[in-house]
Length: 193
Image (cartoon, rainbow, N blue to C red; front, side, top):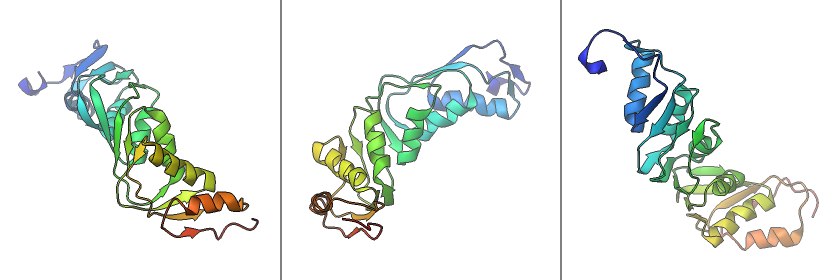
């Protein structure tokens, strides 16, 4: 409809928007550009299925104070760990929490970010092969490797370096962690074993 006229469309009476994330986002963009008016508190029912980019959901959720319901047919969320986590953290987003996740992070990643995301969904969390270093406490990093061993996380190849934040560590725990990876474990913060 917006494409049919140069006039402003007053949509203040609309309580629910339905359609694909991109179609609904187009309506909110038009609202921002003042070719549609009155949007901002509607419920949204998204029709997308299959793989969805996480930021498409959170951007849309930021455009309305209404509830955003994601189709049960969404099978995979993609993006950085933080971007996908933001979907699950969004207070106005309803999602099944059974989606697989394909995370794009490379380089250094906090181990707890991986396990926190893993706890949000019953789907498998696939992390990028480009992760070179895991950071955190021994228990946090061990938990990431354990999740990878259990198959709820995949993609860690047991060559990652580790930078620990512990000041006190049990030697047995440090040795167990050392057996998980061929990467170098930096335990410089540890003052007591």
